[in-house]
Image (cartoon, rainbow, N blue to C red; front, side, top):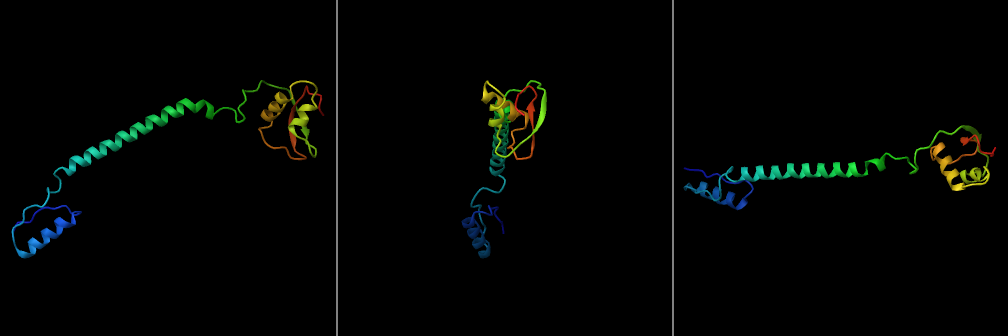
Length: 140
């Protein structure tokens, strides 16, 4: 008796093979034996997967290289600060960075708020907390 090789996933071929074997007849393969053609498809599939992975890695690398500097910039998007002489000041109820900047005298209040934000790490003010304020400001 000669047994044919078959694909285990092909249920129709499997049934024909079993029926023929149980009758005791010789069976011709219903499909290509395992390993013929499937190895080539396996190699091609694996190569395609490797190429897709390499392509994805290249794309991610290019994107990170393009936007990388923006990812490590100052958290509030401001240029690096120049050294400033500072003193600590205690926050009172209702005080904001804007009110502190306004009390520093005439000039650009928004620029002062940005400086205060940078000096104090961008965190919210809490009553009783100590904040850093430039020494040359008139605010107390």
